[in-house]
Structures are given as structure tokens and as C-alpha cells.
Amino acid sequence: MSDDCQIEVPPSFTALHVDARSRLRIPLAELRQRYEWCEDMAQQLVERAQQVHHDLGVAQDQVIARIGAGLADPASQVDAAEAGWVLRRLAELLGWDWDEVAPPPDASDPQRPA
Image (tube, rainbow, N blue to C red; front, side, top):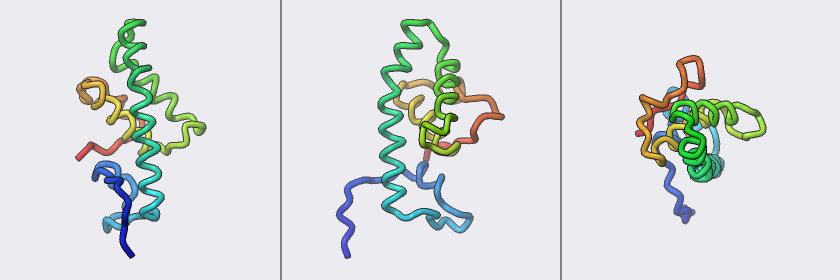
């Protein structure tokens, strides 16, 4: 059976859903669906993050912290690892240095992008 799916999930996202032996803990179709959800969320947050940063004068790290707090809400439909990935991806899309805007160590422990 061929896999005609065009979605290429980055290693940084796949790493969130593998066990110690690098086997997926969820079906591949679900991984792709979760990735699309998280990527879409990061893309949709770009404009809002820019508005808060530029229009309201909120520092980049505070913008990321506020969005992270929102992602911690169960209604966001992402777990802590995925929320961390979304924050990293958002920072990447905005061109913000992750080391400068990263949440404090007690926040979610996101995987570093590959």
C-alpha cells in the first residue's frame, strides 16, 4: 500500500511522539494530524504576537509567556510538549531568538527543533 500523503513532519515534532526506542507512540496518520494542527496554530499566532509586541509594546519574552499560558489551557487541544513546540515554531516564524524568549525552566520542556 502506497503512502500518498504529502505532509512531511519535521523531526523536531516527531520526537515529541516517540518512545525511548524511537518508535511512534501514536499512528502515523494521527502524528500528521497533530503536526498540522500545531503548525497551523503557530502560523495563526504570528499576526497576534506581532500586534501585541509592536502595538502594545510587550517584550518578546512576555509575548511568548502569555501565549504559552494560553496553550497550557486544556481548551488549546495540545499537550505540554506540543505547546512547547508551537512556542518554538512561533518564535522561529517571528525571527525571534529562542534563547532570549524561552519560557522559564519550570514551564513546559519543549524539544529543540532539528
